[in-house]
Length: 439
Image (cartoon, rainbow, N blue to C red):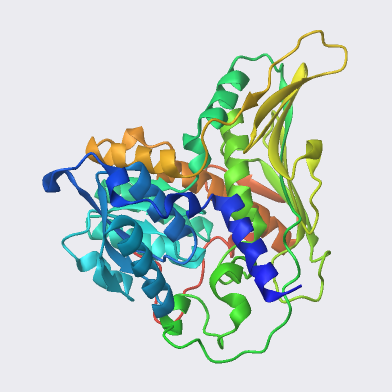
């Protein structure tokens, strides 16, 4: 496959996994009227603007005419140059630029920040932003470990600012209406919930030699608290998702979005036990570390939740490459980003209409974030840090079960496993002089 084709597929995956910014660009500033008084502006700084950070920023500027971008931060100078040019052309904005997020947080003309850096930076930068008095819109997953997301919850409670996690499906109409239908009880007793992501676009990642970072990249800042390693293009930008030092693979990439709604529909939080099996079965010899094939089983006592992901396969459950299925005694509700439908169980005489999506992407989610800021009311948030922490914990439990290779029991009171090796994976080890924040 050509490099251009591969880049196209990766961009398509980004748009699918987290929506995208394309529809927001090439929009003249006049389209964002009415004019907003300077005193009513909400000034946005964006940290990490190569992928979803940029998608979130442009969605926010488009959906919220009272917002203005005053600061950009990225460790890659070429990314900063590209984003500055786009902001000037499409939004008539010329923010200040930084390579160190702490300098951006020192700025007096930033009210809220978007954090779109790799997962291993989310906790540090969120806590830093809260301590600097900024509101936070942090990309999912909330953190890269169970201990980190707990700390983020505690930091929000201490500093009181709004923290919205980028689980944007929580602000989309058809997702919310699906939950309303589940609450009617028409499905009957729900004993099993399935969530899955079959990612046919994901090809193997060829092994590449280490080398020098590209010119203009502050690689030490990119690594941050992760282990020091030589620069490798496979570990940089988009593909960081498939390496344990920086992220949790498909379990915490797509899984966070879909498991979130599985838990929300069942009003569930803590499983009793977790077990997982899988591995690198599609491309066993490629460069990625995280499993390309995984099946995880969570026992919640009154229902079972299954998570499945498979790289290089398009055809998932119910003919959908992603989704959530709530399987009840009377019928099954199947939900994905295109809408939802109810499939009656055999013998049922009831018929149900299909519901198609009416909105999509992070635009409504950013609107909800800005609304909470303007009203000084964090209870308005659709995906507050507590919600982001809950699903991040559950997905991390799945990865921990996979890494240990054992069935784990979870003590919801003590917030620990019944396994010493698993408990050792709750708290990350920081490197390069970085420490897990203390409040």
